[in-house]
Length: 230
Ligand SMILES: C[S@@+](CC[C@H](N)C(=O)[O-])C[C@H]1O[C@@H](n2cnc3c(N)ncnc32)[C@H](O)[C@@H]1O
Image 1 (spheres, helix red, strand yellow):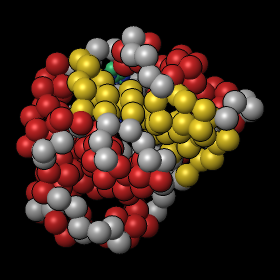
Image 2: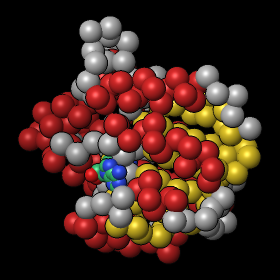
Image 3: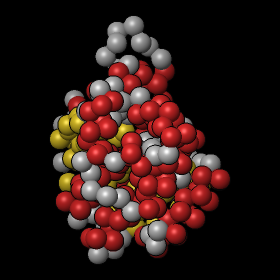
């Protein structure tokens, strides 16, 4: 419904955000249109992201994260790279439905951290969130865990460095979710060697070829890597 819910001036910005998918944009729009209605707080964040060109995981991946957190019965979730709290809101809703818990929100921008606190407060979810205005890998190292789920969505060059820290903090049977794993389709282009692309390739290979993980790549939006820790 997003296409229909957006006011006209936002449509172009929304289309730019949707362009992060290498999928047919019509397919992504179709998938989003099938989702159940979302509450005002989530829709407001989606509109704001479209207006500002801010990269959130979007409603299709958000709904999948919610589903996975419900399936896992998650009570302890750590997000690396939380922006203004959109993915955090999906996880916090799952925690509430699971009977309680905490989702750690990490971002190094003070203004984004404050905005997330305000938005999640307005949605009645802030009691389920612990806010870290800090570098995310260091914040995870400083937080004992264990965690049921870790979402990785920081600067892409840091993905390889984050992996062993996440592996140490997830419980056995815990779930790693990493966003942008297809990196706008650059990862399979042989001529593409940017630092971010190479880092995502190294990270992906490290997960897919390590018997620590039961991994799968879901080509939704910009690609989610899901990996269960043995
Ligand atoms: C892609 S956005 C996160 C979007 C969020 N997961 C969502 O879907 O709503 C990544 C955010 O993390 C911040 N960031 C990037 N690398 C970081 C790091 N190493 N530590 C903390 N914040 C980081 C960026 O400034 C940005 O605000």
